Image 1 (tube, rainbow, N blue to C red):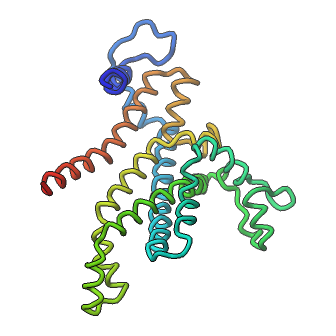
Image 2 (image 1 turned 45 degrees about the vertical axis):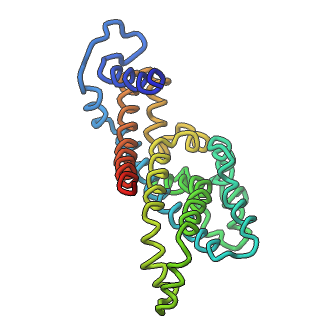
Image 3 (image 1 turned 180 degrees about the vertical axis):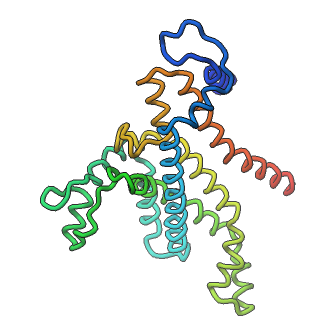
Length: 277
C-alpha cells in the first residue's frame, strides 16, 4: 500500500514539479509550481473545471432528492418493497463505461423523423417540443450528462437513507404522536435531524465520485470539448499530448479536491466515535 498508493502519489507530485513536458525531454529539472500556475492560464483547464462543477452540483442535488423521495416511499412499508428496492439498486450493478455506451444511444441528438432514444420517446408521448440536443449542446451538456449518473446512484442513496430511517427507534415516533405531533412535524423535528450523519456520508460519497468521474463521460462523449472534465483532460494531456508534468499537476489537483471533501469527514467520524466511547 505504501508503494502503490503513497509512493505513486509522491512520484506524481514530483513529476508535477518538473519540466518533463514531452517524451523527448532529456534535461529534466525542477520548475517549482510553474506547471500549476500555467494550468490556471489554460482556458481548456478552466473549461474542464467549470464543467466538473456543473456536473457535481446537478449530480449531487439530483441524487439526494431522488434518493430521499424513494426512501420516504419505501420507509412507509409499502407492498412489494423488496421488488422496488432491488429495481432501484439494479443500476449499481452496471459499470459506468457500459452504461455510458447505452446512454450515448438514448441521448442521441437526432430529432423528428430521425429521432432515436429519448427524443423518439418524447415524440411518441406527444412531447416532441421537448426534444433536446442532450450532451452535444454546449449550454446544457453537463446537465444532460448528469442524468445517467443520477439514474445509477439514486438507488444507492435511497438504500443509505432507508437504512438511516430504519435505524431510528420507533419509540421516538410513538412518543411524538402521543404528544399530538403531525407526521410532517415528526419528520421535520425528529427524523430528519437524526439523519444528519447519513446525509453527511451521502454528500462525501457523491462528492468524491463526481470529482473523479471519467468512464461515464468517456463512454458517452469520448473526448468531446463540450463535456470535458478534469479527468478527461488529464488523460488527454498525458497520453495524447505526452505533457507528463502538466498531466501530473492536474492529477494532484483532483486529489486535493477529493481530499478537501473526505478529510474533514474522517476527522468528524473519528471525533464522533471517540465521544461515544
